[in-house]
Length: 236
Image 1 (cartoon, one colour):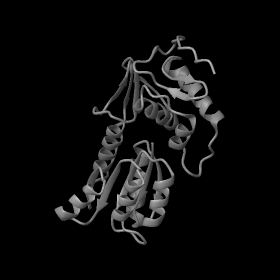
Image 2 (spheres, rainbow, N blue to C red):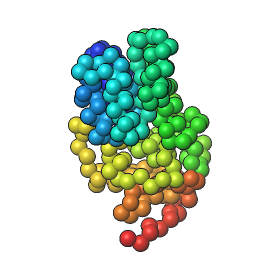
Image 3 (tube, rainbow, N blue to C red):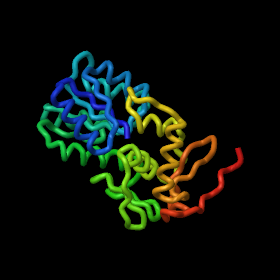
Image 4 (cartoon, rainbow, N blue to C red):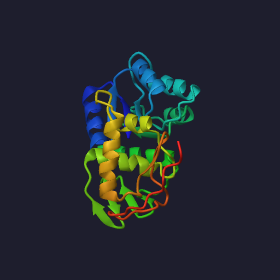
């Protein structure tokens, strides 16, 4: 999932980006409020980690602008401001969670996973779609209880589709969430990635809806590694 980190202290920003990348995220980092507002207003993120004490535009003002413009991505506030009144102000402005500095990166990653999960309407830590299970805590995927070895890119694709199980996810949305800003983005590469995953997970685990996108059904039509059953594509 694509995550925006807004933090003006370079060392903290690097540490946060490293922790969230290790947890399976694709991370963009910005250091001032004006750039943060623009990126959050024009690009789609699964999560924003937002410091309040920013140059050019305060983090709280950035958050209020996003919410006025109906940007609904979950926002986790980071700040050294410790009073309860400031925390209430941040939550009332539209923040989804609040983590005071200093903090442990493990707690940040856990809160990030929870916010992404809840934004998709899921309450449990492990995502299940029929025989397919995805555990974001240790980035493990299993099929009928049997672990499946995946590359980081393969894991991100399966995790995103499982998180949105039952919904057809357009190819452009998947590309946005799988690749960083500087990565090459190619619909053919995405199709090749899906093909590799079908060989590992079974043909029915990820469906193609031609002209619309990709879908992990809930439950899938087939989930055996050698499964050949797949629902036919609807007519174009």
